[in-house]
Structures are given as C-alpha cells and as structure tokens.
Amino acid sequence: MEGVVRFWSLVEQAYRLLIMRSTEAIPADGGLTDDRTAKARIRDAAVVWFAEHGVAATTVRKVASAAGVSPGLVMHHFRSMEGLRSACDEYVVARIRDLKSDAMAAGTGFDPLAALRSSTAGPPIARYLARTLVDGSPYVDDLVDEIVADAVEYTQAGVETGLLIPGKYPQQRAAILTIWSLGALVLHEHLERLIGVDITGPLDDQRSASAYLAPLLEIFSGFFTETTVKLMNEAFVDVPAEEEGAL
Image (tube, rainbow, N blue to C red; front, side, top):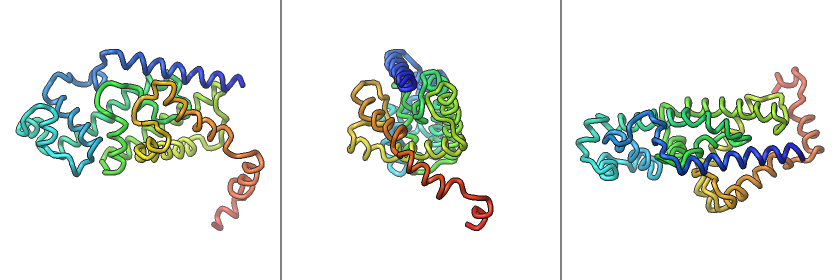
C-alpha cells in the first residue's frame, strides 16, 4: 500500500509541474533559437502542419501562409521542403532532449512519453512524433532509441524507490513498453475516441489523469494472476538452452 501512495505522490508532483510550466513564458524550444525570428516562426508553423496533416499534405505555400511570410522567404531559409523537414526533425530531437530532465525530476514512472507532454508551450511535439513514426524520417531510429534509453532510466529509478518490481530484462521490457506507448501515440485519435483522453497533450487535469492512468495502473499492477504468470514462465520463459536452440 505504501508503494501505491508513493507512486500517486510522484504523479501529483508531475501534474503540478505541468500546470506550473503552462503558465511560464518558456521559449518553444527551450532557448535553442529566438522564436521572434521569421525562420523560427516558419519552422514552428511547419511542425504544426506536419503534425496535423502529414508530409504529403504540407506545402511551402501552406507553411508560409501559416507563418505569415512569403513562400520565397521559406525557400530562402530552408532551400527546399526536404530542408524544412530536416530542420523540424532536428528541432523535435533537441526539444525532447531539453525536456528529459524535467520529466525525470517529476517522477514519470511507467510513462515513457511523459517528456513529450511536459510542456504546453510551443509546437505539438507528441503529434509531430506520431506523424513521423508513420511518414518516416532519418531521425526516427535515433528518437526511438533515445526514448527507450530514457525508459530504462525511469524504470530503474522506479525499482530503486520501490515503485516498480525488479526484472531480469530491464532493457527489453523498457523497449517493449516504449513501443507499446509509441503505438498508442500513433493511434491517439482512436484512443481519444474510445476513452476521451488526448494523450498527445498534457494530462494536467484530474479527469484526464484518471481516465488514462487508472486503467493503465490496473493493467500493470494486476492484469495477470500469479497462476498465469507461473504457467507462462514454465512454458515460454524458463526454457532450457538446448530447447531454445531448437526453436
């Protein structure tokens, strides 16, 4: 019972951080660029367009219109649509890295994507990542690897504080958890339709937190009975080495 209380205490701290950050004047990319410049406005407008409509539906004219500049200025700064997309990818990678320390300090627990939702300022990072996972990008592998690495740290911290059960496969379970979470991110519109929560945004109110985290906690804390776990271990996990080679 003490572990559950401590877990929800960390969740509450995370929500307080989210609410506080939403009222702060935070640069959209953590100070990496000056967002008063035309180049930064173009980049942010492109991130929004890519996130909402995908790569195929995004054009120089649409981005220019959204940024309040001419198409020629877009080409001047980024040379091509490929150059603009690359700049957006680089921005998202840098933004995720910039958010990691805050997310970890807030006690993200078993949510590998909490860092993507920890800032309400700036372009929609989580939605952009969801689109990128579908449309593809040279940065996708690096992004996923970094999120998995963070998840390994999160889960280890949870083990050390008594919130999570130690495991024999920390890297593998962090990878699986991350892929599940990224899959939910890609299908976020269906998840919102089914449970009424947009997981691409901050869970900064009690209703959203309860609708998403309560069933998630139930799944991870008691989905399988001890009998089921024992049977699965005997059938699939505790396989002798010679049998593994025969598969």
